[in-house]
Length: 470
Image 1 (tube, one colour):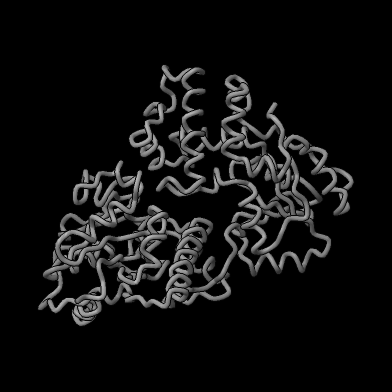
Image 2: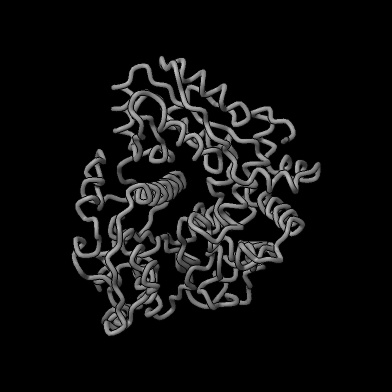
């Protein structure tokens, strides 16, 4: 009797998971169903169901799809990335009858590969004559976010395996071309089947040196050299261990003031104000924990702060900027899924003439109803920092350091004046109006909207004492 009923391949985009899956499916008795718990599709983009379970049924009961995969003939499994349906982790991680395969790749290589695939639109390659390639720009802050997501997920896997006394089969990207390793994986899964050769359909897409794939290669090297330690081959717990928000922190050049922003808050207004205080205009950004400690030591009288926004205004900004908008900074995949799977009544294009104030109010109310379930862990779509509770975000900040002041948007001028005085500033600029969507919100706000938001953000109302928005 096999010790496993099913398996999960824990991987990420651009780590070689398609190639690993193709080889797993080459073994008699083994089958992987793709990204079975991707929030935007089931298995593969054009697949309607897996073993009779549709995407809607999966949303309602993730365990039903796990059971269907387990019950199918042979030993079956699926690929799982860090942004997939989080409820599934509670099912598979503690289950010793679920085999865990952990696929890893050098994070710099996977990041650059993802950037190239994003601009070329090519995610698989079966013949070199169809290859598309383009040099891309390395974005330091974006890479920091990428690495932090990988690190947190690997820590989750590691701790779960340790606590339950399980072990996993680790596969590095470089191991995928090793026939002995693939046959060893089959042995780990408990099958007697062995391969004589590896799958040859999929080809490596970007074999050129990193210096040819990144247009700002020198800048990338400089950005990576700032990190305390980056053991790229070490997994599952690799360095640097940075706090989840440190790369977004911004300091003034002319004064010892540090802003620890909350997404969907008055970030732009505060940043503009910060860049104008003191004798030297400008900003310091792209911190790591190491460089932020250095900044703190250098500026003994420093003050750090964050700014709360009323939950009604913040939820509305998140909706307008991330979901309603189709421009820069919007979440196009989540937008598409909310329209198609959750029936969110927003137009394909933001500037649709038929989308009036009445339609905006209805769509915002629908978004709030979805948001309540999302924050409660009832949706496969991630709980994004743009709409996570402010109380939870402050808890995340505390992993590195708490702000000296938690300011409020509705008394921003007074709070910033207090901070400026504390660091010895006699004059300061006046912060600009912070919410670009204020008038639009005022046009749809009423008691019902307030009640919907209060139901979603009960924790923030209680923790910070918010009253009704006005």
